Length: 499
Figure 1: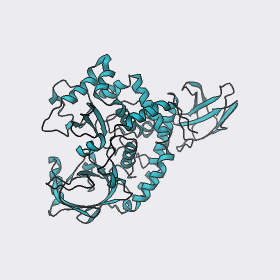
Figure 2: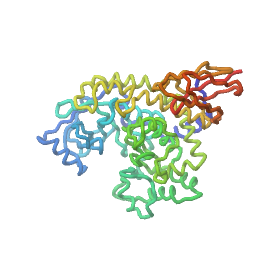
Figure 3: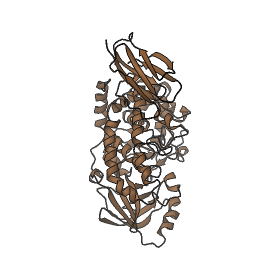
Figure 4: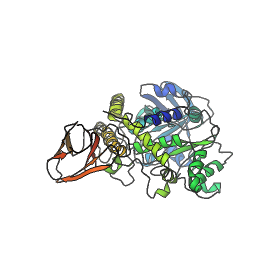
């Protein structure tokens, strides 16, 4: 049974968010098609590969022809892209294509520029697709993603993720306005104060629109408000940033444990100054490290058990989230978003069938990909289970949602907890509902198990250690209601106490 608290606030949040994102037009047909697309890149240059390599550090495009789903786009710009996704030794490199680089006015369903990502750390080919679909389904500004077979001069080069570009077309679709400045938080967009001189920020961020004007004063003002407003932090931030949508982006980064983002490495995002509202809007970028694939020195257990209030250490390096967590209303809104999403959207019930459907759609093309980074067996395994240190997609969702549901429980929100523990501790709790006693069976090799019981307010009301294979816990004095049992660090169970 799934119980939901704070519903009136959820309805308010929904009304706030639904009014901002404009109905999309460009790319709707392409990204909505339930198919694996085909992209053929053709070069007439004899040494085209060497030219692509030479052009990469110069950020230059090589001229070529592209045929997409049977439609020819001649004389377009093609280049390698990426950092770690490019620098690996494989020949399966990521690409960026600009249909208009060499003067053409061609468009693909209204799109002029797009990315072909190679899935270099993902045996499942799912991380980027599932995460970006989630962002878009929640009405957040993030690129859309589709699958495509890529061919180079007629040779199948493998299965790629076809990812929308964050450019003026994107801004017009999402915000109904493309006139403002859009900055990319790269290479180190930590939003720390570097002084009032605009040029101090040139090596930390990239200006992606209005480059000729080169006016960075709005970004400097935002960073000033974040860092130097003192007791007026809330009012100053509300003037400069759409905090409601940022909190939802923040929650999604954390939910999918994408630490190659602002909450972790401190980059991989865009921030757009919407001149209509005169506020900055957050844009998610580069979700390929979702599902805990960028570990920042943390173990898989630590990643799956990442608190929803996580701030990279030292927290002063991420001043935006550090300071927002000191404001009770911001922290409560963040909690409410997690509560809303954990109730259904981020769950095996909601996502497993999607994962199965995607796997069926791409399996043949994955198997045919002769230069992919993992084996066919790794692809199948990683849909459900770990491949080395790379966490399984479905089990990540199970374990992550279990942990967050338990954390939400201690913060006043009660959502469904998956009672099927898939790791080494196979634990049974019964009966449920219960009257006088709850029995816990430990089918594990641990010598001792720690049992903690919490009430619906998140207060710990019982703690005990057990070295038995089965423990009978007296709950006769507990008031009627819902309770949470935590066994050790990663097993959670709800039970109901009845008279």
